[in-house]
Amino acid sequence: MTVCITGDVHHMSMATRDQEFLDGTELEAAVEYAEIAAEHDVPVTLFCTGKCVEEDPQRIRTLAEMDNVELGGHNYWAFTTPVHSAWRALGKLTAGRIGSWNGPRVFQSYEIQKTISSFADLGVVLRCWRDHAYRHDSHTPRLLSRYGITHFSDAVEPDGDVRTVDRLTVVPINTPPDHEHVYHAFRTRDFVAEDEFEGPFGTESHAPADWAEWVLESADAHRDAGTVGTVLAHPACMQLADRFEAFERLCVAADRGVFLSDIEA
View 1 (cartoon, helix red, strand yellow):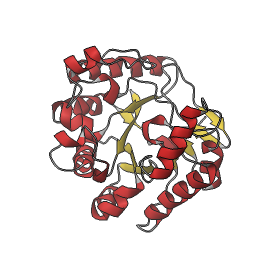
View 2: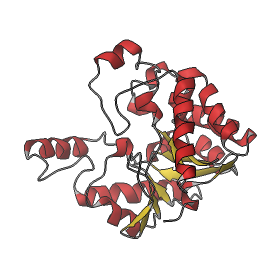
View 3: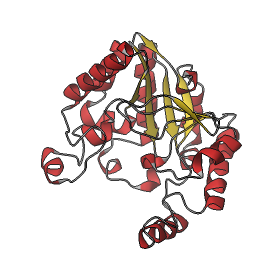
């Protein structure tokens, strides 16, 4: 089975709900995740915020030096600055006519460049990108393409096709994402029962092993259709869910893995 396994990694100063439950940092979890994948000769693409470079450059270097790891960008601040908050509020006030999660176009351009530059300072050339929480606007593809990004994975689409937009190869996440569909940390059964979340893969959450089987079934269906199954499995979620057991199950099943940048439209 050919799969593209991806994960998102956030700086610890974000102080997310998941991070409250972690043993260590998200980057520490990412290194363990990558080492497990390496044991099974599986490549992984990890989208990291620029602040990760600022807060823990050594572990970013560790990941960059691993043969089975491709690093991608995941914004710099992950929408946590006052500029982002103000532009997001403006979007709500104007029903989306003005404003977005990404900030004004000039600020979004600055943040993309800052992220790319922070990795370049460590000798890492970014070619792949995923916005935090899949948040992008009409300016995002053109800006990413302008600054050398070639692959963009920012949409959850069960039946999505790889395609070209503004010279970017758009690679949808076409298997059930872990964060929204796996019980872990604060996402308990009681929490999910009261939550109003509904995404492209529905409302269900599962125990880690059952989620892994769901992902594999979805990836098999894409294989049969002649497409690559693209998986989103966050290092933090995989540690919190079951200490990487479900993640290792995915790695064992992947007889052929690819980096995101290997996928062609």
